Image 1 (cartoon, rainbow, N blue to C red):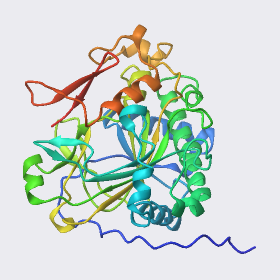
Image 2 (image 1 turned 90 degrees about the vertical axis):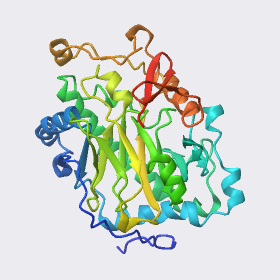
Image 3 (image 1 turned 90 degrees about the horizontal axis):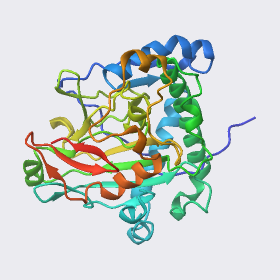
Image 4 (image 1 turned 180 degrees about the vertical axis):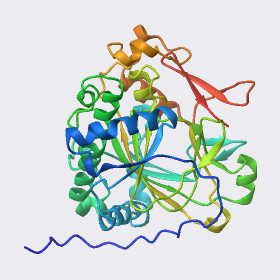
Length: 368
Protein backbone atom coordinates (compact mmCIF):
# COMPACT_ATOMS: atom_id res chain seq x y z
CA UNK A 1 0.00 0.00 0.00
CA UNK A 2 1.47 3.38 -0.97
CA UNK A 3 2.21 5.90 1.77
CA UNK A 4 -0.46 8.57 2.24
CA UNK A 5 0.19 11.86 0.49
CA UNK A 6 0.83 14.63 3.00
CA UNK A 7 -0.37 18.20 2.43
CA UNK A 8 2.35 20.27 0.78
CA UNK A 9 4.09 23.27 2.33
CA UNK A 10 7.37 25.15 1.85
CA UNK A 11 10.51 23.35 3.00
CA UNK A 12 12.38 24.89 5.91
CA UNK A 13 16.15 24.96 5.44
CA UNK A 14 18.04 25.61 8.69
CA UNK A 15 21.48 27.17 8.89
CA UNK A 16 24.39 24.71 8.94
CA UNK A 17 25.82 23.77 12.36
CA UNK A 18 28.49 26.06 13.75
CA UNK A 19 32.15 25.27 13.16
CA UNK A 20 33.25 27.43 16.07
CA UNK A 21 35.35 25.78 18.78
CA UNK A 22 32.89 26.24 21.66
CA UNK A 23 33.01 24.86 25.18
CA UNK A 24 30.39 22.12 24.91
CA UNK A 25 28.54 20.62 27.87
CA UNK A 26 29.42 16.90 28.22
CA UNK A 27 25.81 15.73 28.30
CA UNK A 28 25.10 11.97 28.38
CA UNK A 29 23.49 10.38 25.30
CA UNK A 30 20.69 7.89 26.01
CA UNK A 31 19.82 5.34 23.30
CA UNK A 32 16.04 4.92 23.44
CA UNK A 33 15.89 1.94 21.10
CA UNK A 34 15.30 -0.35 24.12
CA UNK A 35 13.00 1.98 26.07
CA UNK A 36 9.73 0.35 24.98
CA UNK A 37 10.16 -2.75 27.18
CA UNK A 38 10.37 -3.03 30.99
CA UNK A 39 13.74 -4.78 30.69
CA UNK A 40 15.11 -2.11 28.40
CA UNK A 41 13.92 0.72 30.63
CA UNK A 42 15.48 -0.91 33.68
CA UNK A 43 18.79 -1.13 31.84
CA UNK A 44 18.60 2.60 30.99
CA UNK A 45 17.24 3.78 34.34
CA UNK A 46 20.64 4.07 36.03
CA UNK A 47 22.01 6.15 33.14
CA UNK A 48 18.97 8.44 33.23
CA UNK A 49 19.09 8.76 37.01
CA UNK A 50 22.77 9.70 37.01
CA UNK A 51 22.39 12.12 34.09
CA UNK A 52 19.48 13.94 35.68
CA UNK A 53 21.24 14.02 39.07
CA UNK A 54 24.47 15.40 37.59
CA UNK A 55 23.35 17.69 34.76
CA UNK A 56 19.55 17.75 34.72
CA UNK A 57 19.96 17.47 30.92
CA UNK A 58 20.56 14.61 28.51
CA UNK A 59 20.30 13.71 24.83
CA UNK A 60 18.00 11.01 23.49
CA UNK A 61 18.71 9.24 20.19
CA UNK A 62 16.74 6.49 18.42
CA UNK A 63 13.50 7.95 19.75
CA UNK A 64 11.22 6.64 17.03
CA UNK A 65 11.06 9.52 14.54
CA UNK A 66 13.12 9.40 11.36
CA UNK A 67 15.12 12.38 10.11
CA UNK A 68 12.46 12.89 7.43
CA UNK A 69 9.70 13.04 10.06
CA UNK A 70 11.84 15.41 12.10
CA UNK A 71 12.31 17.72 9.11
CA UNK A 72 8.58 17.65 8.41
CA UNK A 73 7.85 18.87 11.95
CA UNK A 74 10.20 21.82 11.42
CA UNK A 75 8.55 22.58 8.05
CA UNK A 76 5.19 22.87 9.81
CA UNK A 77 6.68 24.86 12.70
CA UNK A 78 8.23 27.42 10.35
CA UNK A 79 4.92 27.76 8.48
CA UNK A 80 3.33 28.91 11.74
CA UNK A 81 5.38 32.09 11.40
CA UNK A 82 5.95 32.54 7.66
CA UNK A 83 2.57 31.47 6.24
CA UNK A 84 0.19 33.22 8.67
CA UNK A 85 -0.97 36.83 8.09
CA UNK A 86 -0.13 39.25 10.89
CA UNK A 87 -3.78 40.08 11.53
CA UNK A 88 -4.55 36.40 12.10
CA UNK A 89 -1.58 36.07 14.45
CA UNK A 90 -2.87 39.06 16.39
CA UNK A 91 -6.35 37.54 16.61
CA UNK A 92 -4.87 34.30 17.98
CA UNK A 93 -2.46 35.94 20.45
CA UNK A 94 -2.75 34.45 23.93
CA UNK A 95 -3.41 36.69 26.94
CA UNK A 96 -0.93 34.89 29.17
CA UNK A 97 -1.06 37.52 31.94
CA UNK A 98 -4.79 36.95 32.30
CA UNK A 99 -5.06 33.21 31.65
CA UNK A 100 -1.71 31.92 32.91
CA UNK A 101 -1.41 29.97 29.67
CA UNK A 102 0.82 30.60 26.64
CA UNK A 103 -1.69 28.95 24.31
CA UNK A 104 -1.70 30.81 20.99
CA UNK A 105 0.81 33.32 19.63
CA UNK A 106 3.29 35.31 21.67
CA UNK A 107 4.55 38.26 19.62
CA UNK A 108 8.05 39.68 19.66
CA UNK A 109 8.92 42.39 22.20
CA UNK A 110 6.59 41.06 24.89
CA UNK A 111 9.19 40.41 27.60
CA UNK A 112 11.70 42.74 29.20
CA UNK A 113 15.20 41.21 28.95
CA UNK A 114 17.31 43.94 30.57
CA UNK A 115 18.26 47.64 30.25
CA UNK A 116 15.07 48.39 28.35
CA UNK A 117 15.72 45.74 25.67
CA UNK A 118 12.72 43.58 24.87
CA UNK A 119 12.77 40.09 23.41
CA UNK A 120 12.84 39.17 19.72
CA UNK A 121 11.11 35.82 20.24
CA UNK A 122 7.95 34.76 18.45
CA UNK A 123 6.04 31.70 19.64
CA UNK A 124 3.07 29.60 18.70
CA UNK A 125 1.91 27.35 21.55
CA UNK A 126 -0.67 24.64 21.03
CA UNK A 127 -2.36 22.29 23.47
CA UNK A 128 -1.32 18.65 23.14
CA UNK A 129 -4.87 17.62 22.13
CA UNK A 130 -4.33 19.74 18.96
CA UNK A 131 -7.47 18.67 17.06
CA UNK A 132 -10.01 19.59 19.77
CA UNK A 133 -11.66 22.86 18.64
CA UNK A 134 -13.05 23.41 22.14
CA UNK A 135 -9.52 23.82 23.47
CA UNK A 136 -7.97 25.95 20.74
CA UNK A 137 -8.58 27.51 17.34
CA UNK A 138 -5.57 27.32 15.01
CA UNK A 139 -4.48 29.45 12.05
CA UNK A 140 -6.41 28.43 8.95
CA UNK A 141 -3.20 27.64 7.04
CA UNK A 142 -2.24 25.12 9.74
CA UNK A 143 -5.54 23.20 9.71
CA UNK A 144 -4.39 20.63 7.09
CA UNK A 145 -1.46 19.67 9.33
CA UNK A 146 -3.36 19.16 12.60
CA UNK A 147 -3.45 15.32 12.34
CA UNK A 148 0.34 15.29 11.98
CA UNK A 149 0.73 17.63 14.94
CA UNK A 150 -1.56 15.42 17.03
CA UNK A 151 0.57 12.39 16.14
CA UNK A 152 3.64 14.42 17.13
CA UNK A 153 2.31 15.34 20.59
CA UNK A 154 1.18 11.75 21.20
CA UNK A 155 4.64 10.50 20.23
CA UNK A 156 6.29 12.93 22.66
CA UNK A 157 3.87 12.04 25.44
CA UNK A 158 3.67 8.26 25.19
CA UNK A 159 6.96 7.26 23.57
CA UNK A 160 9.35 9.75 25.20
CA UNK A 161 7.80 11.31 28.31
CA UNK A 162 6.23 8.19 29.82
CA UNK A 163 9.32 5.95 29.48
CA UNK A 164 11.45 8.73 30.99
CA UNK A 165 9.06 9.14 33.91
CA UNK A 166 9.19 5.40 34.56
CA UNK A 167 12.99 5.51 34.61
CA UNK A 168 13.01 8.50 36.95
CA UNK A 169 10.65 6.65 39.30
CA UNK A 170 12.93 3.60 39.24
CA UNK A 171 15.83 5.87 40.12
CA UNK A 172 13.97 6.75 43.34
CA UNK A 173 12.92 3.11 43.96
CA UNK A 174 9.28 4.07 43.47
CA UNK A 175 6.69 2.05 41.52
CA UNK A 176 7.28 2.52 37.80
CA UNK A 177 4.03 4.41 37.17
CA UNK A 178 4.35 6.84 40.10
CA UNK A 179 5.04 9.86 37.86
CA UNK A 180 3.26 8.50 34.78
CA UNK A 181 -0.01 8.48 36.72
CA UNK A 182 0.41 12.23 37.26
CA UNK A 183 0.71 12.93 33.50
CA UNK A 184 -2.50 11.89 31.76
CA UNK A 185 -2.75 12.88 28.09
CA UNK A 186 -6.52 13.45 28.34
CA UNK A 187 -6.40 15.62 31.49
CA UNK A 188 -7.09 19.38 31.29
CA UNK A 189 -3.46 20.15 32.22
CA UNK A 190 -1.70 22.60 29.93
CA UNK A 191 1.08 20.39 28.57
CA UNK A 192 1.76 21.88 25.18
CA UNK A 193 3.95 21.90 22.12
CA UNK A 194 5.66 25.07 21.00
CA UNK A 195 7.24 26.45 17.88
CA UNK A 196 9.62 29.22 18.92
CA UNK A 197 11.60 31.50 16.65
CA UNK A 198 14.42 33.75 17.84
CA UNK A 199 15.15 36.59 15.43
CA UNK A 200 18.54 38.35 15.19
CA UNK A 201 19.02 41.52 17.23
CA UNK A 202 20.88 44.77 16.68
CA UNK A 203 24.43 45.31 17.93
CA UNK A 204 23.11 47.86 20.41
CA UNK A 205 20.62 45.34 21.83
CA UNK A 206 23.36 42.74 22.14
CA UNK A 207 25.62 45.18 23.99
CA UNK A 208 22.86 46.22 26.39
CA UNK A 209 22.03 42.61 27.30
CA UNK A 210 25.55 41.17 27.31
CA UNK A 211 24.46 38.99 24.37
CA UNK A 212 21.81 37.19 26.46
CA UNK A 213 18.59 36.44 24.57
CA UNK A 214 16.82 34.74 27.49
CA UNK A 215 18.00 34.97 31.09
CA UNK A 216 19.11 31.93 33.02
CA UNK A 217 16.09 30.09 34.38
CA UNK A 218 14.61 26.71 35.21
CA UNK A 219 11.52 25.42 33.40
CA UNK A 220 8.09 25.52 35.02
CA UNK A 221 6.92 22.01 34.21
CA UNK A 222 8.20 18.51 34.86
CA UNK A 223 10.06 17.56 31.66
CA UNK A 224 11.01 19.64 28.62
CA UNK A 225 11.68 17.92 25.29
CA UNK A 226 13.57 20.04 22.75
CA UNK A 227 13.99 18.73 19.21
CA UNK A 228 17.63 19.56 18.49
CA UNK A 229 18.28 22.20 15.81
CA UNK A 230 21.60 23.46 14.43
CA UNK A 231 21.71 27.15 15.43
CA UNK A 232 23.64 27.21 18.70
CA UNK A 233 22.42 29.41 21.53
CA UNK A 234 21.34 27.16 24.39
CA UNK A 235 23.71 27.01 27.36
CA UNK A 236 23.44 25.21 30.69
CA UNK A 237 25.02 26.05 34.02
CA UNK A 238 27.21 23.00 34.69
CA UNK A 239 27.92 21.56 38.15
CA UNK A 240 31.28 23.39 38.21
CA UNK A 241 29.46 26.74 37.93
CA UNK A 242 30.49 27.35 34.30
CA UNK A 243 28.15 28.07 31.40
CA UNK A 244 28.59 25.53 28.59
CA UNK A 245 26.98 25.31 25.14
CA UNK A 246 24.61 22.50 24.17
CA UNK A 247 25.84 20.88 20.95
CA UNK A 248 23.46 20.02 18.12
CA UNK A 249 23.13 16.31 17.34
CA UNK A 250 21.19 15.46 14.19
CA UNK A 251 17.72 14.04 14.92
CA UNK A 252 18.38 13.96 18.66
CA UNK A 253 16.30 15.29 21.53
CA UNK A 254 17.60 17.54 24.29
CA UNK A 255 15.67 16.73 27.46
CA UNK A 256 15.77 18.52 30.80
CA UNK A 257 14.21 18.39 34.25
CA UNK A 258 11.89 21.22 35.26
CA UNK A 259 10.72 22.60 38.58
CA UNK A 260 7.82 20.14 38.77
CA UNK A 261 10.04 17.05 38.94
CA UNK A 262 12.44 18.82 41.31
CA UNK A 263 9.55 19.43 43.72
CA UNK A 264 7.99 15.97 43.29
CA UNK A 265 11.36 14.28 43.79
CA UNK A 266 12.22 16.30 46.88
CA UNK A 267 15.27 17.76 45.14
CA UNK A 268 16.69 14.33 44.22
CA UNK A 269 16.44 15.50 40.60
CA UNK A 270 17.27 19.20 40.36
CA UNK A 271 15.99 21.51 37.64
CA UNK A 272 19.02 22.80 35.73
CA UNK A 273 19.56 26.48 35.04
CA UNK A 274 19.82 27.25 31.34
CA UNK A 275 19.78 30.33 29.11
CA UNK A 276 19.90 31.37 25.46
CA UNK A 277 22.70 33.56 24.08
CA UNK A 278 23.48 35.13 20.74
CA UNK A 279 24.64 32.40 18.31
CA UNK A 280 28.38 32.11 17.50
CA UNK A 281 29.96 34.31 14.84
CA UNK A 282 29.46 31.92 11.90
CA UNK A 283 25.71 31.82 12.64
CA UNK A 284 25.27 35.54 13.30
CA UNK A 285 22.19 36.88 11.59
CA UNK A 286 20.49 33.47 11.51
CA UNK A 287 17.01 32.99 12.92
CA UNK A 288 16.80 30.14 15.45
CA UNK A 289 13.73 27.92 15.10
CA UNK A 290 12.95 25.55 17.95
CA UNK A 291 10.31 22.87 18.48
CA UNK A 292 9.43 21.82 22.04
CA UNK A 293 7.11 19.62 24.06
CA UNK A 294 6.59 21.09 27.54
CA UNK A 295 5.24 18.55 30.00
CA UNK A 296 3.17 19.47 33.05
CA UNK A 297 1.75 17.28 35.78
CA UNK A 298 -2.05 17.16 35.92
CA UNK A 299 -3.55 20.39 37.21
CA UNK A 300 -4.61 19.04 40.61
CA UNK A 301 -1.26 17.40 41.43
CA UNK A 302 0.26 18.97 44.54
CA UNK A 303 3.96 19.54 43.92
CA UNK A 304 5.11 18.00 47.19
CA UNK A 305 7.92 15.43 47.54
CA UNK A 306 7.11 11.73 47.31
CA UNK A 307 8.35 10.96 50.80
CA UNK A 308 7.54 7.27 50.40
CA UNK A 309 10.64 6.95 48.20
CA UNK A 310 13.23 4.72 49.94
CA UNK A 311 15.92 6.83 48.27
CA UNK A 312 14.59 10.06 49.77
CA UNK A 313 14.38 8.38 53.15
CA UNK A 314 18.10 7.61 52.85
CA UNK A 315 19.46 10.83 51.31
CA UNK A 316 16.95 13.36 52.64
CA UNK A 317 14.86 16.04 50.98
CA UNK A 318 16.37 19.25 49.55
CA UNK A 319 13.80 22.03 49.36
CA UNK A 320 14.02 25.43 47.71
CA UNK A 321 13.86 28.57 49.87
CA UNK A 322 10.25 29.30 50.74
CA UNK A 323 9.03 25.81 49.83
CA UNK A 324 6.81 24.18 52.45
CA UNK A 325 5.43 20.69 51.84
CA UNK A 326 2.14 21.41 53.59
CA UNK A 327 1.57 24.49 51.42
CA UNK A 328 3.02 23.17 48.18
CA UNK A 329 1.19 24.66 45.17
CA UNK A 330 -0.72 22.52 42.72
CA UNK A 331 0.71 22.13 39.25
CA UNK A 332 -1.91 24.54 37.92
CA UNK A 333 -1.23 27.17 40.60
CA UNK A 334 2.50 27.13 39.98
CA UNK A 335 2.17 27.11 36.18
CA UNK A 336 -0.34 29.95 35.98
CA UNK A 337 1.51 32.01 38.58
CA UNK A 338 4.81 31.86 36.74
CA UNK A 339 3.34 32.19 33.25
CA UNK A 340 1.36 35.29 34.22
CA UNK A 341 4.42 36.95 35.74
CA UNK A 342 7.26 35.93 33.42
CA UNK A 343 8.95 38.81 31.65
CA UNK A 344 6.44 41.40 32.82
CA UNK A 345 6.60 41.45 36.65
CA UNK A 346 8.97 43.63 38.64
CA UNK A 347 11.80 41.50 40.01
CA UNK A 348 13.81 41.99 43.19
CA UNK A 349 17.53 42.28 42.49
CA UNK A 350 19.84 40.49 44.93
CA UNK A 351 23.45 41.25 45.86
CA UNK A 352 24.76 38.52 43.54
CA UNK A 353 23.17 40.30 40.55
CA UNK A 354 20.43 37.73 40.08
CA UNK A 355 16.72 38.56 40.35
CA UNK A 356 13.95 36.82 42.24
CA UNK A 357 10.18 36.69 42.48
CA UNK A 358 7.86 34.82 44.82
CA UNK A 359 5.35 32.42 43.21
CA UNK A 360 2.95 30.74 45.67
CA UNK A 361 5.55 30.92 48.40
CA UNK A 362 8.37 29.50 46.24
CA UNK A 363 11.39 31.70 45.53
CA UNK A 364 11.99 31.71 41.76
CA UNK A 365 15.34 33.00 40.50
CA UNK A 366 16.30 34.61 37.21
CA UNK A 367 20.04 34.34 36.55
CA UNK A 368 21.83 37.20 34.84
